[in-house]
Length: 147
Image 1: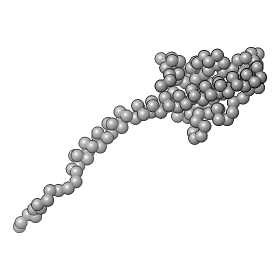
Image 2 (image 1 turned 90 degrees about the vertical axis):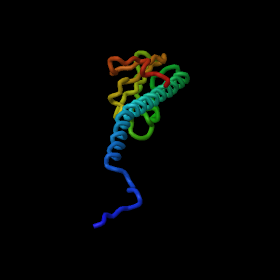
Image 3 (image 1 turned 135 degrees about the vertical axis):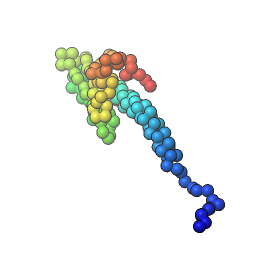
């Protein structure tokens, strides 16, 4: 019997070639995913800082008109980050009844940000920025970067 011989080479990939490509894609994904997640966290944190700054300006305008922070509230647009979609930070205003010239704005991480190393971000009427419920090795300067 005669063997069927084709003059055209076989098209396609071998199983070994496909496995090598799959292994490389998996390796790239495993290496890139933590960097992507860190970038998303930093972006959410920057959005929370922006919201805190906008809320701070809102309160100072309120103070300019009334010479006190007593009775001030935050508009809905400044009470969560982001404004639409799943919240990653809740922004709250704390007023000290005994000190009408003082306030503290707090951005508390929720949802996908609840385990963020920076924890809760806060700013007061003087612009002092602090963090709480953060990882032990995390400083305010790590969390309030402009990057």
